[in-house]
Length: 139
Image (cartoon, rainbow, N blue to C red):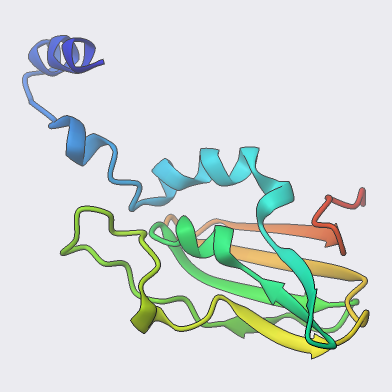
């Protein structure tokens, strides 16, 4: 891969380091991954008499996103805060303790379907509705 990048760089007249090419901090870099992993965008876990709605996967690819909105069971989507990207770290998308918890609590078995709006840094929006198991629901 490095050899290929070097040949492309020499042909184009610029050099892009492999690290910079794989930082996954823009919509162009994360959109293909999120597109292939839609069934992992959210996860519902029953714990301690509650439904916990996790967005861990989205947090792990948050660099390149400007925001997330989540709607439960057809309710109007609400903004979910995203932690900042850790651009000063080797892994900017890492979830650190100071980022908080990537989930919210709901009454047990109350979540039937979840609508997710992703706002990318390229000003595009992607919307997906999934069932309780995270499987996409056909429109």
